[in-house]
Amino acid sequence: MGMSKETANLLPEAVLSQAAECLRVMAHPLRLRMVEILMQGGRPVHEIARLCDLSPAQACGHLRLLKGQGLLGSSRNGRRVYYSIASPQLPGLIRCIRKNCGE
Image 1 (cartoon, helix red, strand yellow):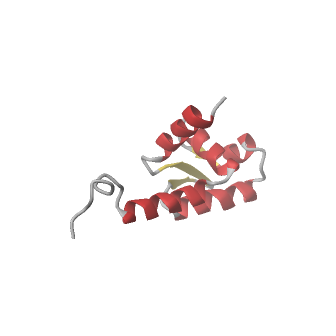
Image 2 (cartoon, helix red, strand yellow):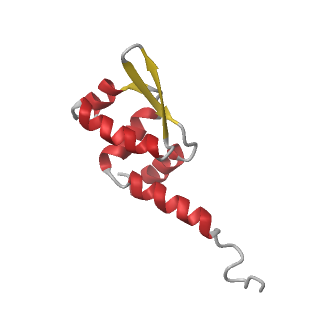
């Protein structure tokens, strides 16, 4: 069965499913803020927590969720865990929010 003109340029179902999962995970103001912070470069948990006005434990919960979805990466330096952006789509998502939902 061929594609009609109406559906020829639509995104594949797999792409839409992946985007929906990313958006579900990112649908929290603090997680959006964390990504915005990490767009400036990798940071340790305690800095992210401070900048988001959270306890380190609360920040860790959000960061673990983002990492579990493959959106963030982490590395350890001594006792400190540094997080960074792993998904190349995240900065584009923040830019889209700034452009379409910003001031």
